[in-house]
Length: 629
Image 1 (tube, one colour):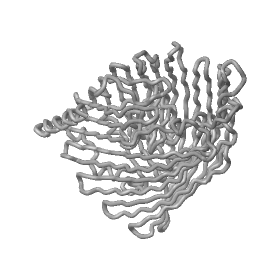
Image 2 (cartoon, one colour):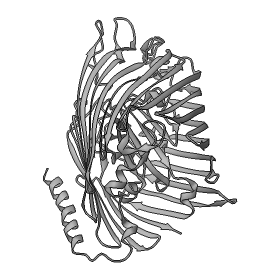
Image 3 (cartoon, rainbow, N blue to C red):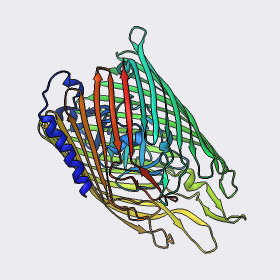
């Protein structure tokens, strides 16, 4: 605890020093969003339409592009660490377990993740491969994290929440951007992006970036040999402002991850996404389509190819007291998963999936202060047929205060791991583990309530509480003479409280503090023989505490700090730890910034999640130079 208190003291001392510094020159260039601007931030992920953060009937955190710049963020998982109530653990190499409200495992499977509306949730393994989710961080406008079920709007797998990464328009990224970074255990990201006008009213941008990360250390002290190289390029073109707007964007990437045997895992893929939006008097219509291709090969173990085609349309209509949104969508997956080692395989090897959905949601203004929202999504998947995901929400808003409550249902649809995976015993044909064609969708019924208030121009707070009931969670059933079978005999209750406070301590010092408490209890259906007792589906801390501090020390110098305290993980055991990130930024001249960034400064190395082969993650120091012209 002493290092943590010392680190907080350092931030306060810098603040006192800043108080004695004359305020002259271009201070506005270093300005953090005010409390008023933060609560007025527009969000779209909670209800699929634009609304003020202060008026949302859900638990939402917004990480702005300015937050990412001020904290020296270099990757999406680093960015998500800033979200107050997300549990972010580095599990191995460039892979992370990221979740809210519990159920952290190596491939956390209860958070739906979108990048500009394109889902990156894997229908093969469930969860997200964070090692290939890369964007140019300077192009991120904001990241919206909605905690709690989002199935009514976004569909299956939005069980505990939705993460939506929203990038800037091409019109906002004209000019040239160059980033160069070098650190104690990584090189890069090195990135260049250029944008400009396209015709009379349109805009474009194109970028290329690369990064290299050294291997980490095993808990035993040995070399994990998981060095990581990644390169990516992309573009965006869009029409100008008007009633009808169109944009098209895409990315290509390739990378490698080292392996203990000296080989390399090969990664590659690409995507292209287009969206047409038309806005008129009282309505907005949108049609989106994308194609996504991923390739992953682990020598002598696994080769997977996945192609996704998705088409989605919605219409928003505001009339009288109603704010109605409805739409439909279709998604096609085609996966080819082959394994070189005959002990592990998928049956069938190839699978083509067709998924359809329709949804509708209506917010009704009962009076100028009281609003009720009702909606549902009907979705069909290839494993369990039709699934209904409804929600009922209410909010009362007066001046700077909002009180809200919600009752929702969401599902996690089965994946190929749940249904098609087979593992043979070494040297024979007998199965050790098998998926089940009868695997059901996991479900949650969530009860939520929240209170949000801006007390004055210098302080705001947000509190959310929830009680969740989970049924048909994945279990590993053992029967005499039979392989371990993946079934749905695990259930759970969770409850928790999440709180956030933002204070403008002085005009030049802003502080964000958050805390999350989680309680959970597992139970099994009668007759279950699962010996894991739920440990294979969740390993969560009871408490998360995070503190961010932004200081404009002078008209050229920024001093920013981030403290996180993560409670102990019960099984497999990981001790409680605290870490500190610091950034000192210096503006050499308009358009040229230097930053010295330290991450995980309180320990030489530390363990965040105990995977099959536990790895530790090191303290690092990075020097970054950014040019904009």
